Amino acid sequence: MPDGRCFQSYTAIRGQGTDAPALEVLDAGGEPRLRLSRDISLDPSQAFNAEGNTEAELVVIGNTKRTVMEAGILLMLDPEERLQMPWHVPPPYSAVLRLVPDDELAHNDQPPLLDRGRYLHIESLPSFPNLLIGESAARQLLAQAGVDLEELQAAMEAGEQVVLHTGLQVQLTYGLVYEEVPATNVVGYIPSLDMESRGERILVAATYTGSPRWDGVVYPGADENASGVAVMLETARLLHDLELIPKRTVVFAAFDEWIRGRKLSRGASRLADHTVGCLDGGDPPRSGGRRTALGPVGSGDWPGPRLRPERPPLQGTHAGTG
Image (tube, rainbow, N blue to C red):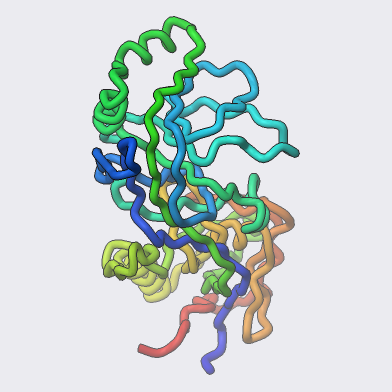
């Protein structure tokens, strides 16, 4: 095995969609009379761990300034509203649909990243679905009960509390499961020779794993994220070929989890919080607590490699063959 490789192993929690969300309005005989699927999606900010289907009455709520004790499938007019529930009482509702404009639906159906600040373990995730529903679908849905969506929204915006039992019996199908899997970050770095800036570093990072399977289908990872890894490796090659001696240590990190927007994956958080273990026994980049800035430039406690008069090598670039 080549020298100079740095690996960081940890346990990741990854989600996988097992069934595309869909909502059916049932008639008196329990047969579907309306099916909605295109305008219902996972909520990127609301993880849950459950699959199957649930049948209950549709209840519309908005401006709820009390504990929500309504049983059924909740349609929330305000997607930012938080449901009030005592922590020790199981929620009476079986699912939550948050109303959003059609263009805010998550059409890629990628599983929400797990918020490690709220949920430390899979067991602590909600066991009921939290989904998004577009305004077009909600309008169709409420029309089945003779209810006008715009009137409800106007009442809520006027400060009225909305709790409407529609009398519609609906069935919601969903599937999102999380599991713990082993994961590894691959990290290399060009050490700084400037003692004054030894605790500062520049991070160049990309995820090397693609987006998860959805409904059993594997999606090619050219842009998610082979292209990002290629740019990172080419940047490392150019800096090495230029024989650069940086003022600040430059870290190259390939994360074993994908990142959406500004939300860190557990792999990125792991790099910031823990020491990286090097196979060659060298001095790895590390931080004392969360002081690694996951941005263009960061600062923190960096013990760094020994000072050398010659050009510092690019360490940790040999991740394997092929």
